[in-house]
Length: 254
Image 1 (cartoon, rainbow, N blue to C red):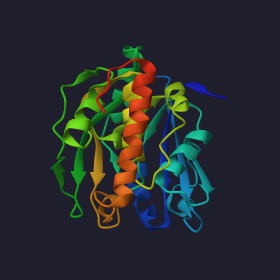
Image 2: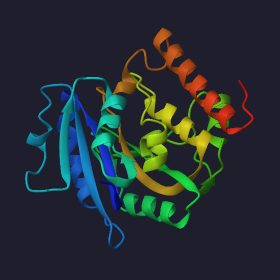
Image 3: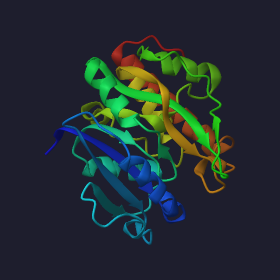
């Protein structure tokens, strides 16, 4: 049964990234939510041999660990979503950390703007030496992100303007899209552009995510930004977004 005052945080984790989970947990445990709200953490092991529970507290009932065959992070996120109960669903990768107040700001934006379907926020890089650096994206103005704006930026600049790892989404809207696109990478960009085709969003100007940079992350793979796999991912993401835009009546450039 769904819980109207629960925010579900979903986290995919594979064996190579499990050691970052304690930092992610500490960032989540320190969040202060509005009165009456609670969070649950649905951690999804992407494949066998992860043993996420060994890196997490055993006495926190808000943590729910599940496991599945290895399908990549976006499949794992979607399976974590399937086990969740919250009215709002927030992504948190196992190697990243939430900034103080991030969840409260997501809740406030969605509660105060009932026609908005999703939020994103400013992100900064968390470097291997523990220092932080501004993220390479040029952020939009804080506030309303009109439907279609994210797609327009993506087609012009070949990258999102807003970081899809910071998404928080109304449950029914996420269910309508079937969760994250089942791709080896960029499935969160596909979700972002799908959400953008269906509903207005909201950009939170305060830092919401510390995005860890390290040698083992998916974005360092040579196929992430070039080659036939990249071309196939971008083609499907575009086709998905264009189909949704045409279905909903937004003029789209192909």
